[in-house]
Amino acid sequence: MDSFELNKVLGAVLASSIILLCTHLLAVSLFAPVEPAKPGFEIIAKAEPTGTAPPAKAKTEEPIAARLAQADVNRGKSISRVCMACHTLAKGEPNKIGPNL
Image 1 (cartoon, one colour):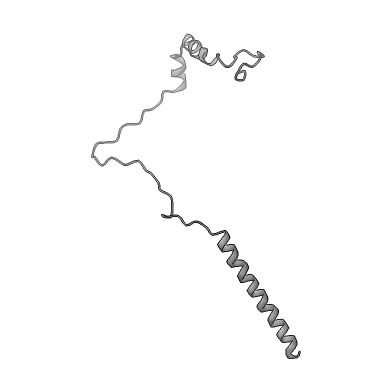
Image 2: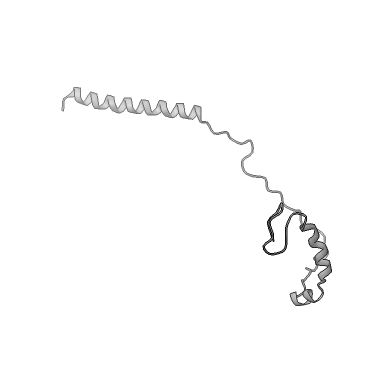
């Protein structure tokens, strides 16, 4: 390999490196990321009470059988009247504003 061929190969490597560097500099100037003023996210947590009072007892729910024994059908009908403004409750009836329930 004579010196002329070696110069062509080294010139091609140098030219490719310069083109790659220019492309990188152009891309960084066009698509520069915006650095936030304060990195991270602010997490807002509820402050824990610092008093020595005992924690409140958690309310336990009644079993479903006890709740069904206390249920009132007439109260359910009066509550469902609000829903019937937009929905139908009978099977096979056409839809109103909302779908048939």
